[in-house]
Length: 566
Image 1: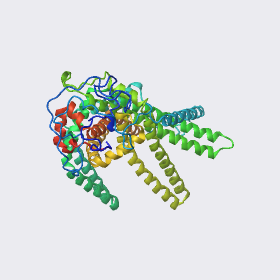
Image 2 (image 1 turned 180 degrees about the horizontal axis):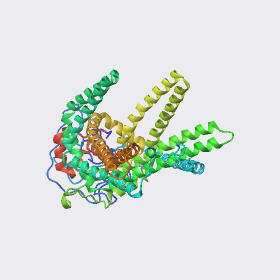
Image 3 (image 1 turned 120 degrees about the vertical axis):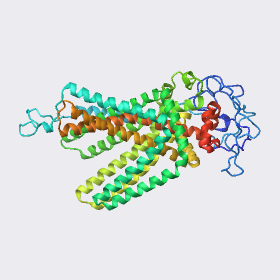
Image 4 (image 1 turned 90 degrees about the vertical axis):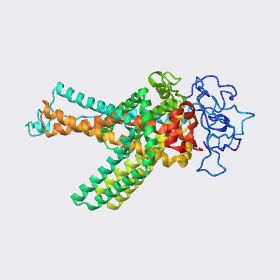
């Protein structure tokens, strides 16, 4: 954790103290154990330990020096004079070491990055003004002449005419099938995690080869070669990463088990999906109304129109990013609570935590003390997304005007911005775990995440890709099956059998099925990232609280016993 354990001797606190590795943010309040420093020193939000101490477990194996490290390196939390871990790390002796630039966490205000919170609230207020103006000027073009735009004749192939019974029936079939399929796939990930990882990797290769064959048959040789190369790379990665599958299997099984025990994580994901969907609908109506407002102005103000377009694009990306990242931080906080504080031996084999509703507690932190950090990280992505959208608009406009060089330059710039945006968005996913676990401000979280990436970045990416392939396979299958179910419903029900009904309801089913799976997959992804970060930074905590799980991970991933020196 960005510290040198040899600097102050080997007998150091395993879970924090003055050495800089702070106590996790989710720890409860209460008096610290004897020998710990005062409760107002070097802690994120108060409290040094869980509300109940860890029980004394069986003797734990002694750490061995890191065979991959230089001879002068001290393995994470390694004390050659200490045979076992006790209930708590030994108390700090003597005065604390001096504060320096390597110190991990310094006492600051409980609320982090307040300026970013104020900026987000100002953005919401400005968007509210735009929504009020836009909705008041929104004009929906309706046909009141009793025809359907076909010279007074009705064409049943171009209209949707359903009874309430048919509408409710097909919506129930789509939503119900999507929910059932998502649950079944979730259960399959619990029971057959390893097999699904292998199947999903093979599935990716098969799909890429099929695309290459299609383009070969269509005579588009360049596209066929590109897809064939991608298939070869995917096959190579699958073969090279096969030794990492056991770790991904254990993490996926653990994450699905935790999600089953704490379904509040899925509720948080569903609330986030509803909020994003509702805001997108409001944004579309606001944008249309604002454009009509400017069209009605006499004389029209093009400069003001462009300013409104830029702001509305920025508001769209900023608000949706904040909602999504708030859900991510909420779920990450729950998984960190399980990792550090969960004790096995509960009823029906469940893990117990000394918090009555850990998901709600994590959500409270996400929308209060950590909300500024969420807004800060989301702001960076929103700015990049806005710039990329404007470049795309410029490219299209120049292409319509016949300025090929300007259109090409704008398209290339948009592509470069898109690559940077994807990298930062992926990085943010890991940085927000630091925010959720330790309550750090965004800059500190980003710095610590970068150090973690330098230590375990390759392992993190491989693990993320293996589990991501399983989620991608599930989303694709469920979306396609829901579409097929909608097709069958239209085919064998009283709904008129025409191409319009097929197209509308199959497309709607695909979107609904993918959205339902999206809620679950986001929760699994957040749990996967959080678990890996906690493992990389503090494997001793898992060894102390859940030794059997730690041992199975150590056998699949021996590097875990040498925690990342971040």
